[in-house]
Picture (tube, rainbow, N blue to C red):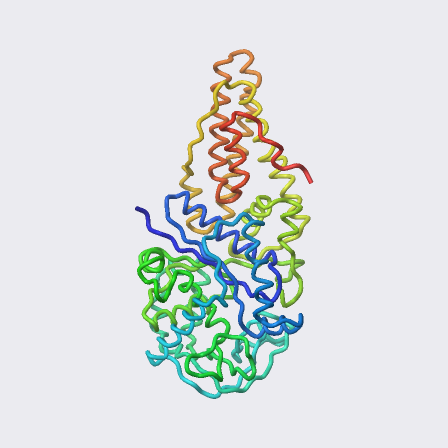
Length: 475
């Protein structure tokens, strides 16, 4: 039996509806989950929403709602991505779920029991968009390094802190394994951050200043920092604590854990979270993949900056598979990429309508007109380079391989002209056509993680030995 895979994304804040930037992360994760299932692995795929913190409180106040009512209104919009983008996640967790709150309080108690939590007075500059204090060395001329132009708020209060510095040697040892972080320069970034020296970090806010958060155990005056409770979702989603012999054991303890995150999350996902796990005696994450950002007109997409693109509207115009295709082939997995609807439309017409759609129609029209029996549909990926690309999170390369297959099949049709041969030599022509259908089937199989509905449509047409409906009408 192949190793079980636990796959999770970061949890998006619900201070605004979903945008195309997060759609990139969830589509990458979904394609990887589907690939792993096709490769014979049992996969548990987790997704959800981050619902505490000051940004949520302010967004709720702006709409005249309580934070919980606001969260109940926004969370379904993120869960609606499942249908819109044809996602295959197994679990949707909300950080306002009762079990998650219980888990966050439990991890706090364990870290406290281990001597890793203490209280002290603190003064610093706070970024509302990051929901964290920004270190003096990180501050840029225009404010926060992650949110240029946004003012930092000076905050002085007594908070609880986590003994981050205690885990410096452990983190360097953990990061020594090249497999822990992809791409490699993000691992180097993490190592350099640790080597510069780790400062203990605050993990609570005074309830009098920030009311919307998980209550700190045995201290009614404090709530947890939003990211501290949110990180715990990775194990609370598996039933921890209380179900250590169920999914938690099968997928976290005995399986391989893989997290997808944005490139600005290195210190949270690969440093703070790993130190927290070590503190409470839980196995550390096996791999974290950090993707790049999508830019609009050269600027990072950000809900706080207001420059967002609605993925639901794009799906209405182009379809889920077309958007998935674009994000996985034309957006770099690890570097920042520009996006526009015009670029999506160009790729749609050139590579889907004129490419894949046209090829499928030509091959299956030949099959419908000349083959008495349908070609057997057999599942399988059967391509070492394709498999290797997926294993390395190189989605561009994996999809490029499929499009090379499409080009090769088009070339074969042009060179052999089976529509002529079948008239002069019926059996020889039918043999060529069967080979073309088999080639199209291999393409459909490799498309399944990327464009699941298109893959299914092509395979259904092969089974029926009939030309499919127009897969991609020109835009």
